[in-house]
Length: 304
Image 1: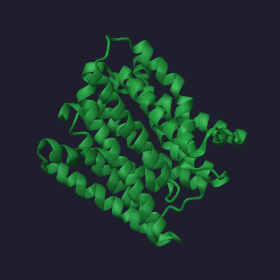
Image 2: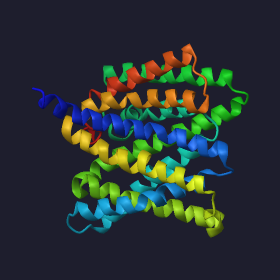
Image 3: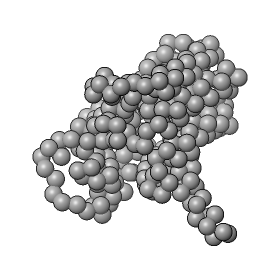
Image 4: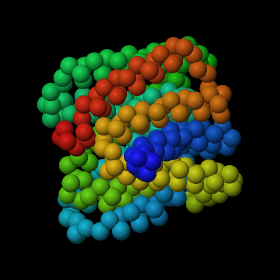
């Protein structure tokens, strides 16, 4: 029994570390924005450039047969909307809103998937979906208006929240699209190649707008960007996949719910972001709503 218990805890531990890594991304971005005159295009390009070698290895070692022209088009399109566009909108939004609010908005993705699936594929919206959506969007409204009340610039909060919501919408579209492609290509190879396309889009945008001179940054920018790439991108992607393999998507969904809580806590501890009772209540409603819909589905792909 003594040996079995640690073995059972290994999968949940992997997911907990992955959720913490994902949660810390916004903290690192906010630190960089606060300390340096740096923009979203530069940060996104650095994050993906540092992540690129690891995703290349992931694609190569995944193996598999040759890809068709249809596969390459799908990889390029999903790499664009998922890893590039979604990330870019998120980075832009974090210029205006707190890390905690950003993480809660992104956490709405499962409910957005339900709504998009209903609109695009006529997937029925069931009773637990309605309850989940009501809880989630009621909670995010509480957090949003609380932030709006505390903010010196209400327009900035509205703009940033809108950008991050578009990021969540973009990533939800990526999740739906990937459900049809991953079974043909394989999860690891799909992630590797889609990320490589995203890196090409991000670096292309960066060099067009900034030129090579934009790569000249203080050392701390590189260290924090490398940390973001390793701790908040590559590592959690791999650990989350391992966690799903070991304990299943439902348990992963439950454990991952700690992510927004971690972001809110470190936003308060490191960034001095305020926490009010209304924000806590709203966050709990969002977590409850998203968990309700997440626990009713094994994976997004299974619903498509």
